[in-house]
Amino acid sequence: MEDSQILMLDEPTKGVDIGVKAEIHRIVRELAHEEGLAVMVVSSEEEEILELCDDVTVFAHGRVVQSGVPAGDLNVTRLRE
Image (cartoon, one colour):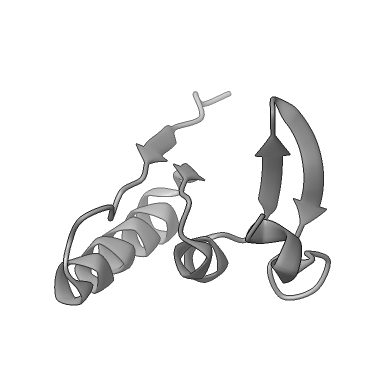
């Protein structure tokens, strides 16, 4: 059994311009796909979460308040809270 590899990112694009942000997103997706990495992203940017993540878990005050896939199960309005 191989060890799983996890890439953990905390606000990976905070404070960078849109061109750099797009490049970071491209690299993260490429690493996940080509290297088979699981990627965990902590971000306060809704667009980034919806673009990068296949599954999303939303926490508020240490509790899970939402979980699902960006294209269907999530209440996007609630992500903004």
